[in-house]
Image (cartoon, rainbow, N blue to C red; front, side):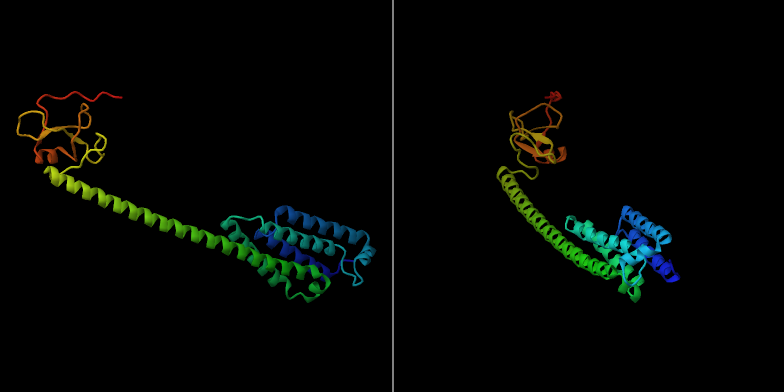
Length: 255
């Protein structure tokens, strides 16, 4: 027969299982399966009370024992899944689940000496939950350390790249300064493969006539010419004594 004490045990275990599902430690499928086994036990206990003697000489209730064995199996399955987790965020969630599960079991079942005596599966579950928590924390710490080491290496690589870029830029502008001094220019940069940098779109040519100007400068969209120097704007070109062509040059033909 189902006594008041048995009903209290059932409700306590049902509450624990529900809370474990709520925190994500067990799945909805496992929750429903547990309650199903529990219901089967209730029916069996109601129609055949004598069956309870098969399970224990202590006359423990037939419905709860199979359910507790199933609960233990859930814990075994959950521990196996920890080794399948590879992502740091997945392991962090596992740590959270196991921490909450351990707290739930400890809070609601640790002071139930009679339940713990009748159902050693509870103690085994609590032990395995803590083992799982330690394993999840350990794997999470390893993944976090690996990520931090990787981020530090990437940071160091960025710093090296920035330093290399800074040195290359310094070397470039030093060469520009020397080239300006050699040619007597105050502004602009030399072309690269007859092309001007994006920041210096004004293209200047060498002097091809007897005028006092050093050469002629063209805008970016005007005809192709043999470039000897590049300026950022027309004012810089004029300051270094370059002039516009006497006739308006044609637009550059699209390629």
